[in-house]
Amino acid sequence: MSFTQWLQSQPWYAQVKSVMDANGIPLYLWAAVIRDESGQTGPSDVGYEKDGSVSIGLFQLNSNGVGAGQTQGALMDPVTNATLAANVMKGALSKLPDNATPIEQLRALETAAWPGNDATLIAKEEPTRIAALYATLKELGLNTLAASVRAVVAVGLTAGPPAGATQPGQDGETGPSWWPTLPLFVHGIERSAMIYGAAAALFAGGIALMSRGGSDS
Image 1 (spheres, helix red, strand yellow):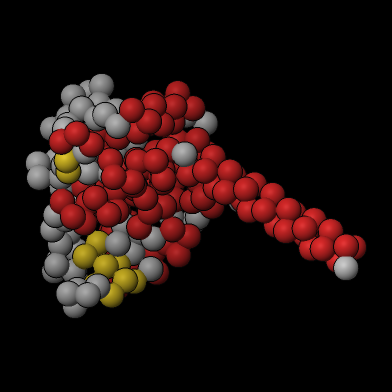
Image 2 (cartoon, helix red, strand yellow):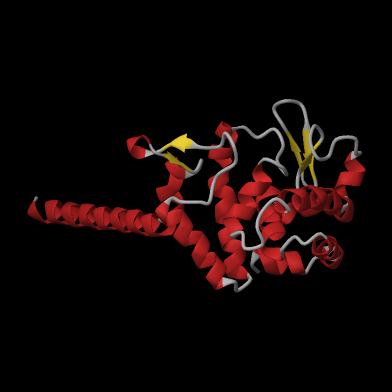
């Protein structure tokens, strides 16, 4: 079962979707956020942060951020959690043009739905978020949008990262905050296959040499 199949099978899915639909948040975006934040642990997920705060529920709302002032029990309620998250997401997305791309939408959330994120943290976590977005688009059959995400990442371009979330790329140009890990995301599967293939070849070569050595003795 894929993540999106699991998500759509949950008893709270219809209510959460209704909340998100009412706020104009596309399914692929909020599903990707859940995928990255709580995964299949879902509403019961609780994360204890290094600063002493707690991140709770579907969207891992932080007790010092979007979840401030809420009880743990309230944040574990998927509808309450989604309602709080949707309010922030709606505000972030309202600043974008109607034709904003999925990556532009995701990046708009990074300084709004993840308050307190600085450039260093975004640079570390954004590749995982983009990977979650890409996988969600693929699972939902939105192949054109998925291809656009992969194409944008492949050339290392976006319409504009959040303020303070850029890093110098090669030759000193400024690129997206995930630029340093770009090859790992774009060619992750391909590179893994090549590595495994090379390892298998080396292993086979080693066995062959051992066999030859044994027969020569």
